[in-house]
Length: 160
Ligand SMILES: [Cu+2]
Image (cartoon, rainbow, N blue to C red; front, side):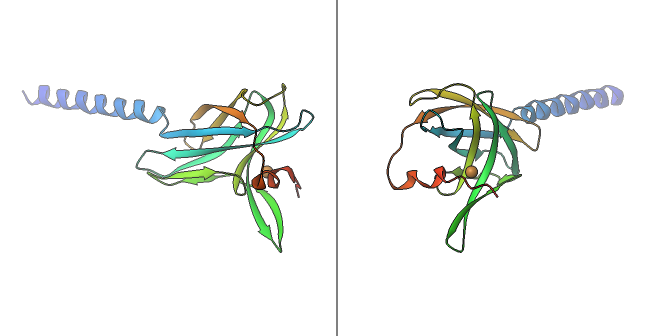
């Protein structure tokens, strides 16, 4: 009787562990409102923005991004030093448990290098977000035309 009970418990335990693994394989990271700023046709560097949500109870880290529609992608942070705006690469972007991080004009953004095809307003491009836990989340970003005050910053691409 005891052996059967132990066996049953072991089975249950294994079943639980398997379920945990299944949950982990599915990333707790969800991306909202991803968009790319439309740029003139010959532009080789574009900027993308999005909101990264972490619905889990553990902190998550975004380690990088890439895209089949661009040669490469980098996460950048815009900082102002001595009145001059500069962009610094971000190698690990923390998203707290239950929290979210917004990539928006003037702050964090994704820098997209060398589009592989023309991208006009209304087009979509695929961005892939990588996490420290090994997940790769694919997201469709819509190309949006924006004009106005906030349009200028991301065009000044001074990489140091
Ligand atoms: Cu940048």
